[in-house]
Structures are given as C-alpha cells and as structure tokens.
Image 1: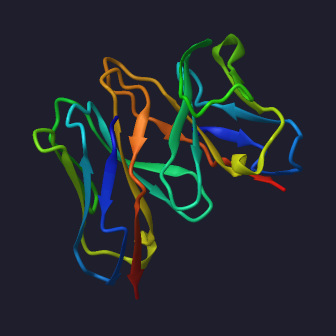
Image 2: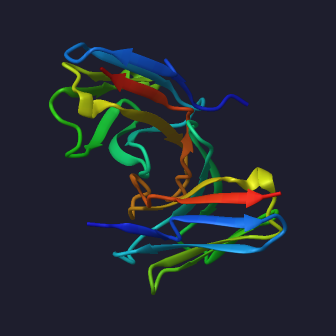
Length: 112
Length: 115
C-alpha cells in the first residue's frame, strides 16, 4: 500500500525566504505527481503536475522535482510571500493515472 | 472557464439521516473522482468514474455510500444512515487526459457535519 510522508508538518518563515517542502513515497512506482495548495476550509488548487516522463516542472516562483528511484519529490518556493501561507499537499497517482494518494500536507506560514 | 462545482457547500444533518451531494465536473472531462478529507489529513480516495462507468471503489466506501454519474456528466454521492464518523469534507475532482497525464482539478468541497 502506497503511503506518502510530507516533511516538515509545519513551517514558519519570514517573508522573502526560499524554502523547500519534501514528499516521500513508500512505493517508488508512482506515475504522475501533483502538488496542491489548500487554503483553510477550501478545496485544492493544483500547482504543478510532473508527468511520468518528466523530472521537474516550474511555474513562476515554484519548482517541483521528482526522483522516482528514491521515491521523493521536493517543492521549492522562491522569495516567499505572506500570500503563500497555506497547506501544501503532494499526491502521487497510480500507473493508470487514477486515484491520487496524498500526504498529510505541510502547513506553511510566511510572516510579513 | 468554469471549474468543478459542488453543492451544497455545507451540510449539517442529524445522525441517521440520508444526505446527497452533487458534483459538476469541468465540461468534457471524462473522469470524475470523489475523495474524503478529515481534519489535518490529506484527502483519501473514495471512487472514480470514467464517463458513466464506476471503475473503482475504495474500501472506505461502505455499503451506506453510493455514487452515480448518469450520462457521464454530473455525479451524486449519497450517504445513508449517516454516522458521526462521516463528518468530513467531501471533495470532487475531474480530469481529462491524453495518455496518462490525468491532471486532477478539484472543486471547493462539501463540508458535512453529523450531529
């Protein structure tokens, strides 16, 4: 059974810092990987999708990488802003792109 | 561009009552997923549809839960004889991919509280 661990569980940083969120899988046979953002009481917003044939994706100040051999992914946020404060979730999909298996998330607080 | 919508956004019900939630996916997305999220946890997969066919159900989906997607458009999730343990956020997602790039887009969720 696939299990996903996200480290750290919570993170508080001053505005402007660069930061890294980590995600690891017990079964490295994941296919696609998505990073999401969730604001309190809200749904999930897709940030980045790394497809099976890719190793990383970039969008603005966000960069996500995937190392399938080790079953690890990282989300890098550059020049953090208070508006980045949210819970960040990673999720891996099975080979057929169906169900996502999620980590518990990292709660990020960026202080102004 | 209309995203995934869910109705209602909040539902408070008494234990033992039946509830039904609706999800409208992004237009022309052929896959639709239901997840459940409890406080402090990531979402857990419940079931998914490809068009109108329900292709997989999680063991979390007890016989009190039923989901449908008639005509391959909107979907409903019904919970019969609700229990306090059913209190959670119920999230719907949809996707349309080529090959295996099924990026999932989530709705705002339905928050269920069972008293």
